[in-house]
Length: 453
Image 1: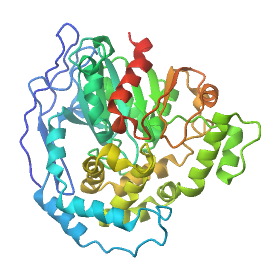
Image 2 (image 1 turned 180 degrees about the vertical axis):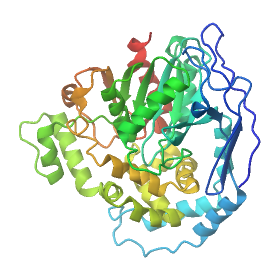
Image 3 (image 1 turned 90 degrees about the vertical axis):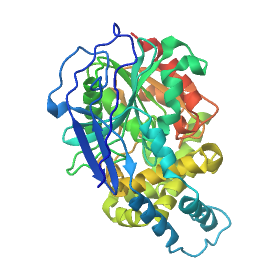
Image 4 (image 1 turned 45 degrees about the horizontal axis):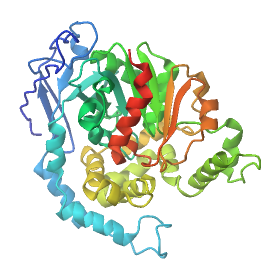
């Protein structure tokens, strides 16, 4: 295990009159997984600064600066495994109806082996302010970028699967520095981007219970720990479920949430959608389309989720042993859920797709990320299952055209009584910030403008 000496200046970029710095509380931190070394020591400014009152955190609440370095040994092993892939025979259809086509995956894996450069991503990540802190016994790694503009709104962004915190990297600039991207200084955000425990560079939970509710509580602890009295939350996929949980818990300081995969399906339609029944004859066009889209999804495209919900450990043996197998499992969903569907490499680029897949491989999180499905074990689209009517904090929703289903406004209004913002946009899919970072940032500005203090 290689220890990397790190020195990070975490002094706030804001004017001293706008914030009060938290005290420096720790020396070095070290974690390791799969040939990855993480190390840090407190910089001149100590822990990240925010808007909360100045106080010294006890050592159990230490916030440690974070760097990542993947060893050459781990990268060589990855290439050797890719080169030794035992390929199945070719599919017997002329399309992707049996899964990722052999020729397509072979091209991706060959590039991963011979052309892809992990260090490019590593350099980019290490240029960002990254930290790790222990919450409820688990190390949570997060990115925390403060705007240069005063009075920026704190925003926590939560990823999903097969995504990761990498989904939000390209949106950091438009969110934190809107004037450089056609926006106004008063629309600036401070952004906090954590990795869900069991994903990315956060540690792997060793006990039961790390489902959406527990992560939601941890996120509130995190936002207060980094220094914010008030904040807003955003999420898609798992991030939507976690943001819903935060809103139900209604922690002090949560001003509102934004969702790009809301749980809006009315209770009386859930059974018919799962059974593949014809939609009720009286449904309006938008509701009928949503019904049919979800019915097709559960019938033809949800097997991955069923495996993760029921047998995450069994699934993990193959995914954790074969990088080609992991790539196929993740690439299929990235491709299906990017808008327009099936065109992920044109939208995201091959390198960014492999950044995400490599992150899962190099951190060994195939099983642990699958267990989040097992812990959740819920219908993420059902308003009743997500208890959305219990939410009283303000809710904003943006519907991207390539989402798993396009939530009708009529369903959203019924599901979220406190919804105050709803917009349908013309670009982007399930990975909204990853695919359309500028549009995503514009939606955050519009959605949260009225909640600024």
